[in-house]
Length: 609
Image (tube, rainbow, N blue to C red):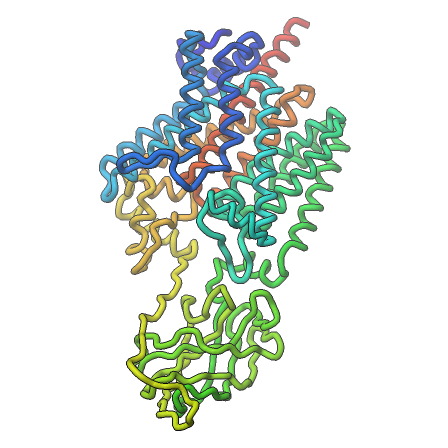
């Protein structure tokens, strides 16, 4: 059935659209025409380029910058459209997801037009959804054979392996790698003492989402190679282990759940098929190795804290009892008796890397400004576990200028943080009088002390705070929302935060759409999710005798991983992830179309018999 025929036929329900799309997917002559071939090449280019977006803009326009990945997207789309014009063909555009996606875009545009703040930002996010739909259709038009699907997934696996290897090297703090990764993001990220690896992606959670998708798709390749008895299955398995380690090193809890769920779903589905013993054993062995990697990749204490707490709030707290009043001479070095209790959730070890020390800050008499921030360090004789206390003699050096001061006691994790900058910290002070030194070699006291403002507490709102703020914003704008992507600009007052970070999203893909586009956008979004769920269910039911079957099963697992992780994070605002998600959805729609074609062939054969 020619593509132009599909473009000219009317919609007749989801099944009818899938039948027509499946006919094109199954048409070998159409599959190797210029336009589908160019769509496949463009799909492969985007798959390879998605995780390597450079920080430096490719092109700077007024009020807008074009990234390297966005430039590749534009070039890929132009190449495909040029092939369509040359071939005088229409693309396959009526898919099961097209109608709800277009309605969602229309709702987002209306919401953006009436947004209470930053209409430009809201329209920009709407444009991302337009681009995502085009990328999805690109993948549908280009993925017309099982060989093309496997090639696309192989390229994704190779790109994901590169990202994972860089994340592993980053976690080992290889200087050249950390320096090189600055081309993709400005800095490294930590939680507690642990570095959160991100490879070439902007943030560790973004890296996790990308690697989860690639991992799930790679499971399909592993199944295909095992069933074809190819030795390359060993390479695919090794790549999957590297990618799983990359996810673990991002320190993202949802990522761990997603990769375990992917293995479980694929193994469960394959177990239900005939002649699946070898493949099932391989998947279970892979899952076991992933669990072993997880158990040995991080210190047990930090991993447990990460899994059981929201961020690091409450990890770093202390209760310090010291003399209320002190008298020292200028520049004097003295030992002060201190009783300290670990009221946080992480142990303090002065021999660890990075180490913990007792320290202090010299403040002016009112305690409002800093005279000297970095005090002398006093090591702990042994690790101080949570709820444990210790008496020790703290080494303190007095300021060189006589006068009245306040001594603020603190604990530092060297090179990471001071406890006093964490939300909920309770500070302990000693009043100090510094007298004139009389010794000949005493420091010369002259001038006035240089003071600076006290550092602000680090405000890290957790998901409960973000979601409550989202509910308040939705209650205020229930029908049209606050505008796509405007949640991050408005959640601060709704959450009671004075200096809210405008880079923070709602940490929930579904809530983000509801708050951004209101009920007007939520309805087509639910419709879209239902259509995607139906397409995924059809895709994974391709008969095992069909060469599409194992690869499509991996893509279906990737869609499930996206849906699971989307419940605790939002990825629509990041180009690498929305591009990867759109490509994945295009592949699953193509798989669903192939399933319809395979079922139609089976029915026709049975009728002839």
